[in-house]
Length: 424
Image 1 (cartoon, rainbow, N blue to C red):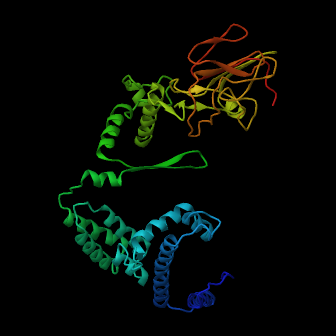
Image 2 (tube, helix red, strand yellow):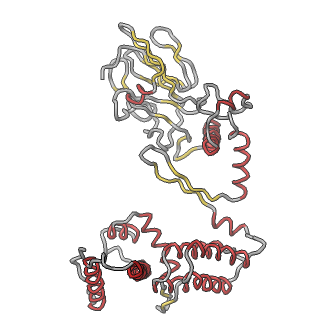
Image 3 (tube, rainbow, N blue to C red):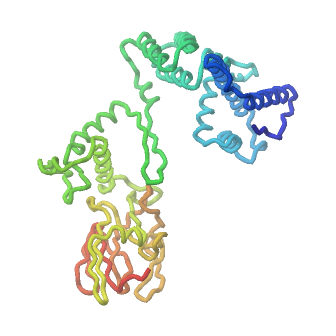
């Protein structure tokens, strides 16, 4: 076991830390293969007590650091960043410890007097090492779920009683006791609008390696009613199915479409919500964001463009590529950047584009916009169409244009690239 070479100025705290580290190092070197199973259980119980008690000491330090915070102490400018960097934990874990310190750590009043924690029974049991993190979560969830009609005295008594049960019960057993106690305190299940507003929330998680995002929603009754209405219409089998060539959005899906639908219930609900958001974006009723109309732009690299090719007809001088960028309804304003395989190149949205002679020409005042990985873009109503060199230049969105051979060029997200084959 390695210990930090940095010492603490307080000799008492330094001596306690050295004793703790020395004891742990000695314990790690002790052989336990000669112990009986009852002795092994006793060792694990005593270790569990120490492991459970240490977070309580850490939460008190977090609370003290927050109360006495100064930007001159660290290079970071917040307690969260300091904890994340100093302890090598994620910012999410640092915020979780910050919130836990609000409930379980002693506080200091305006007159300098030390006040007991908001949940004194839970904090005391944790400092003694008789309850673990799972017990603490049950207790905090119970207290946070109590309605505002429960007065503070009753709330404190309920927390103390439940903390007493936590000293002898497993977390799953404690959960059952918490549910029973909640039913006693609020038998009619009465929650005020303020209680529901306090708990509502939506968390959009980060994108994973596959660009998928996990979301957490706590919906109030009004939002749930909206979702149920949307799911009843758009989440039925056969509706808004991305695998169908002709999607049934406004009309009723026929029995064959419902029979072909192999999506699960959660997948149909996902597609239903996506259809509603797409329709809302297409309606133009979202107004402006930072001075620009709210819309979505899809950008593609050449590699992504080639992977989406459905039909290729090669000739001696020309190559026609029909690409269905998005099989949905034409609600996005398209632009494509096939000049590079990996990185999207500047397009008409706020960047200069090549003219027919390969020279850079100014844009029309649009702003540079990110791709479709969750960003908003300006609504300049333009779509990509080919010029004489096979490059993509903007055209008016929603109107059919013709290429240099007089052939109509599709709008609404279907790009046709004409010209000499691209050498890559």
